[in-house]
Length: 244
Image 1 (tube, rainbow, N blue to C red):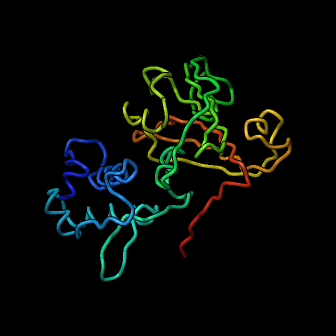
Image 2 (cartoon, one colour):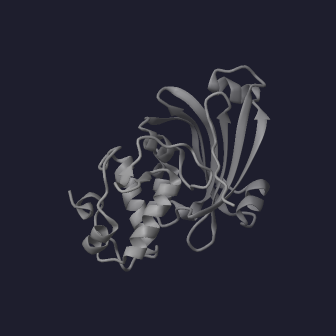
């Protein structure tokens, strides 16, 4: 099947660079099952010709997807959709996207979806003034019926039409309004679960977990996400890559 039929055409008038558009479309096709694990992609020359873009643009897009784990290159054979993916801290993605890339089913146990006035902590994290309206999302993130994380996310109210916009992926909802983060600062530290958090995981109070605190920024450089996610330490691995 020609790639353009799998991912759709690119848009010259989009605000995102063409390579970024191509990355997102290929990634979405993988996550939605249009492209399956083990599928071979056409050669760079064919993709460039089919989409009417340069080979440099195609190479930049594919290399980014290889680095993030969605694609793999085999010497003399070509580029393929990977059969599995680890969670890499160098890749900006949502929990839903991470699990979909592994072939797992992500579900939510919603604790609350509310709109309110920004707190001092949120104001400091998002760089917004007192009195700013925000939306808050609290939920347990579940993978194949196992609670994996408890997530507390806050976004400025201007980034969404309603709290009901977020059904599964927060990033998908933000992308629909043009506010999906394209850059983030993330801090990670080990913490012990409080009684309330432990109950969500069906674990004992004090069990080990990882706290990921993320501030995400949209294409205009505005902070549009402040998320704190508690991952259970016995089921979740974080992988980072360093290059000298």
